Figure 1 (spheres, rainbow, N blue to C red):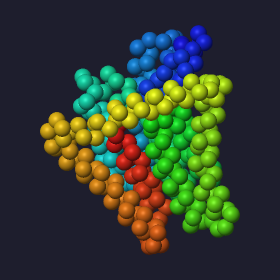
Figure 2: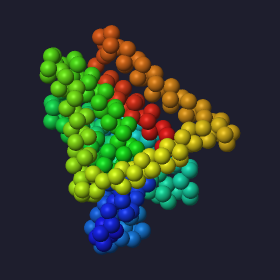
Figure 3: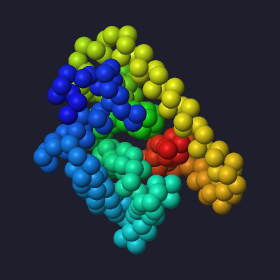
Figure 4: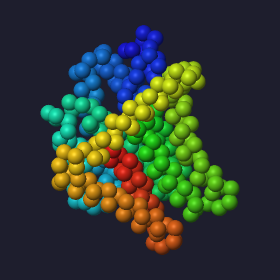
Length: 275
């Protein structure tokens, strides 16, 4: 792969979707015998298979009922596999599949385990999965970090007091950022301390902002009114969940830990709507 010949990710070569995704997929292709489109396609398909298997387990554990879990799984599967902008089918563009954000299912499962048990080891595992995502796909990890920090604060604020409360609010996002920094250094070495690396990073952020604000209004511009209505409904559901659970938490009224998970996933979902 490219790193084998001395190229530095983020300096000599650049991945539009994130620094970590480049060595990750190069590693998966090399594990199958070398870099080729077939090996990349195989890796993406298997990531999707494993992801949707874990997604059903997550829905089953979170929602309880099999029928409700299966219904949610079908909706998620349909939204991904029948993504109409990925012509002629979703695997034409790997970034249109869940290979783009696959660590989030680990994060969701770990956070569900933490909300159910209160054990810090699950929160630590969730924090590490956020760090992995920040390295793998920063545009995904950024929103995940915000949601993770909010849920960590809610849990610490109700369960801890004094200095322990402050530490409980700070250490989960700190662990996430710290683990991402370690992975970044392991990938790029001392180049992460040089101006050229961060100059390229700023350029990548600018390109990302320019190319990802347009899709938010493209449906109306192209007179796709049904899509705009569905988009609006999704936004209202996410925003309503955040407001309802947030107010219940602040007022101390009937807010449970699993509700906090719904709030965190709504924050994460709102961020991902730009994708």
